[in-house]
Amino acid sequence: MTDSHRVEIEYCVRCRWLPRAAWLAQELLTTFESELTELALKPGTGGVFVVRVDDEVVWDRKEQRFPEPTAVKRLVRDRVAPGRPLGHSERTAEPG
Image (tube, rainbow, N blue to C red):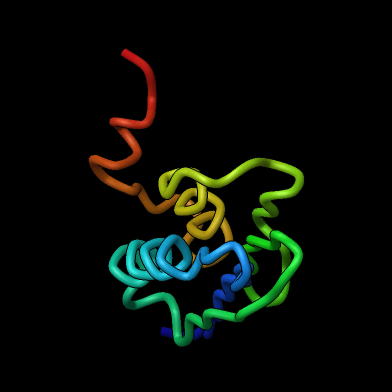
């Protein structure tokens, strides 16, 4: 691996969104185990649920609703492993 990539999931502690953030973190770590060097869970407030890759916001709940894991995986993949197929999770996300 030549590049190191960091993902950060900032979640609202008052909203009790830690389980959702931890589940998404597990999905990303499983999918990108060789591309990511770090995945951080960052406690926040004010209804925040933001996913960042290398300090770039790729998903913000306030603008885009809660993310489906496949949507976040695509966004992360586009930054850490462009062109890499996501396998069955990508195929099942598409209708018919």
